[in-house]
Image 1: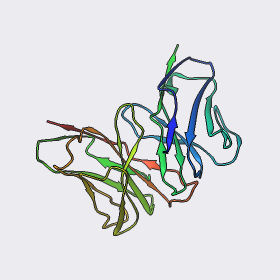
Image 2: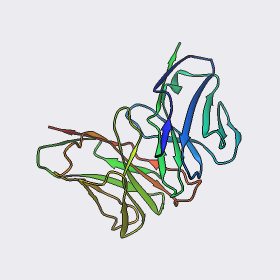
Image 3: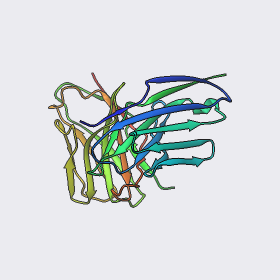
Length: 109
Length: 114
């Protein structure tokens, strides 16, 4: 079956760096997405990776290793507003998204 | 401003009642989706539509129905056959279904059972 795994919760300090990991198992792969979701709000798009390597976008970067079925989201210079859930989603061979349960990130002053 | 609007924000359903969640987009997107979000679980696809007057079942379609009479609108009805409807419902749209197409989400509807 298809399974997306990511940690349930992480805690980090304001101004620090945090890495949120995501592993996936699938026979077909058409890209890996990261979304941010504040409590009770709409998820918003952060990044998309389909080739191996690191994609940097301001304070946020996303990495993909297709051979390992592994991705991570790297958040630098953490701010209190970064407290949210981060959702990992893989697009499968049918172009449908398979979602992880999300990682709740708590930022402490 | 373009976007997706879901209403209402909160909805309560009585036993045996059907309720309809509204979703409207002015992004001129062809594809629209309904997801259900439960605590501790990933988003689960209920229904999706790639074009007007056509829609397909997702992974958990039982107890739900949809229509796509207009490009802008994709309402979801939660029927009395859905025995555990309490959840956060998210509507989304995308330009197409290609590999790089990102989703744009509405702000969600929290449905609870009275």
